Length: 383
Image (cartoon, rainbow, N blue to C red; front, side):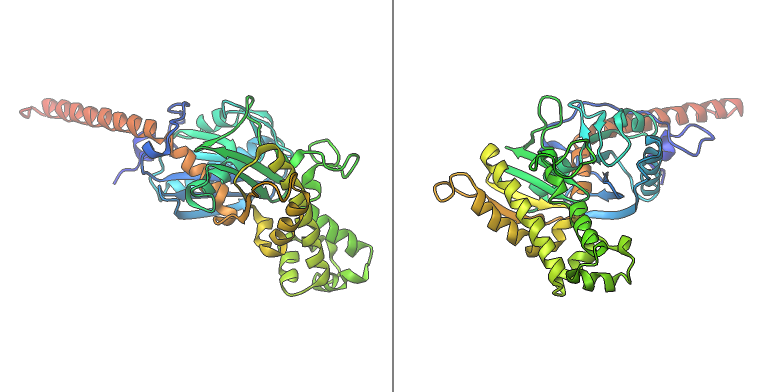
């Protein structure tokens, strides 16, 4: 059976015709076609791609490391294109959604700034649309994760939800009444860059004392490596675990050792969790949501992290004891939330591709009928 790549490729070409179908988003997920789409989650350390069905199930997933930030943005684009083409060899893909770790403009075309990548005012949607034959939708990765948790995960049934994603840094998103709130310029929800410690640790965004410097994967690893480099007695367990190679200390390793009872790793996760709770209390004062969903790779620590966060939240909440308290829950979709959400958001624009594909198929069939008639006429056969 011919796939869309066969139908859209010019004769003699091994790659699709690279055209976008459209840019206007259909707002209601209830009217979106139930077709497979690809979601791409681009973080500071990995690029994850997956084919996702209309119920949020992952049909196939690929993962690769994020190209070094010092390289050209085209290197990241090449990685995305290769992943999509690989998946489209085995799946009938109708749209591609990109969850980018950076500030995406209101038109969801340009990545204005990405602290952990080399994108600066990068027209990501247009460039990918030029290289792929399906509609492309670009959004902030935390927005995509929040959408996924609202549709399929821990946020189902909530009408005022705030998502906090703890990974290399901190991402955030606001979702109200079934709509992601992106702000006037598209960059709402960048909670990780709230300055919580004036003159504090330098952040890749250029400022000092950002929240993500105290409650993120980078913060967790930095603190563990500093203690190990100082040859602190409390770090002997992790030093022995990495055989003295301090650069081998990672966030998942710290979580694993904490689960095994390593006192320093437990304490580090408590510190990260307490900072998380302080930030959430500030967000509750500003936004008053009914639920905070904590996602991202660091959330794998579960109650080692979220327990201290809940305690700190209760201690620092404005008007504590005299107001309803928002729930703080761990995301259900885990590290795949951004990928699933990006794919589901892309489904909102997939209808245009289906219509365009149907027109292309009809044109192809008409051409085949015409070519067959020409061949018969040339052979003297009755039409």
